[in-house]
Image (cartoon, rainbow, N blue to C red; front, side, top):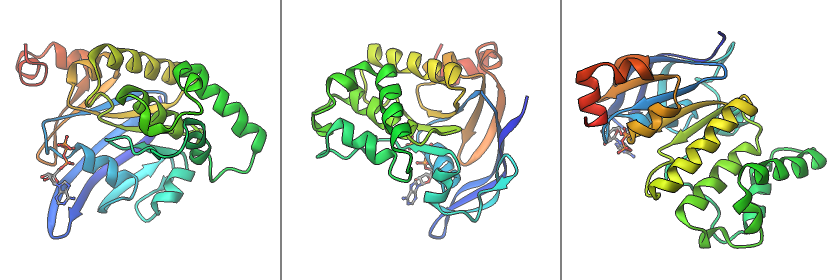
Length: 237
Ligand code: ATP
């Protein structure tokens, strides 16, 4: 298996506060990797550090390319697409314009048109709503649009921050099923941050547990499910 993302001793800072205390983990190419942990553990900060949105130090390698001194827009261009928590779609723009804005750094017009259709094939509801304002979509549909917009970059790696947040359980299941298809069919690797450990572990090949800015456990989803203490703490049963 080939390593896509290699993170060593990653630290992140908000002003004088250190939020990540040197975390190390990998994402294998073609895999879904989950970062799990309680509120405030440092999951969101880890994704922000990878995409250069907070001050950071340590080692972040995307294949052979170091990202530690690369700016956010260039990190996106190198194939890392970040879907932040709270979605961040352009609410006043139509669904289709949001997808086009996702491709703003691309010049291949026919490729863009084809990729909009590709996004619609995964999220047919977005095609039905293509002319509607994004702000009028339901929470689940906005999450789909945010992911669709990220796919317009044809990413190698998708960073998903809490995609289940505030969405009805049935819709969460539907969206996670689409993540599975994206991973299998497009071979998009995924780094998933979730508080909903149960749904995350159904999708993930590998999981890391974070507590107060440190990795405290690494294993397969089955390793976590088979460990009584972890199961109680993270899955609540
Ligand atoms: P949540 O699910 O609540 O977002 P999380 O695991 O993603 O939790 P982070 O948001 O990464 O956690 O927060 C890690 C630490 O960094 C916390 O102690 C938090 O208070 C702190 N922190 C997060 N954002 C900021 C900020 N903008 N300024 C200062 N401190 C911050």
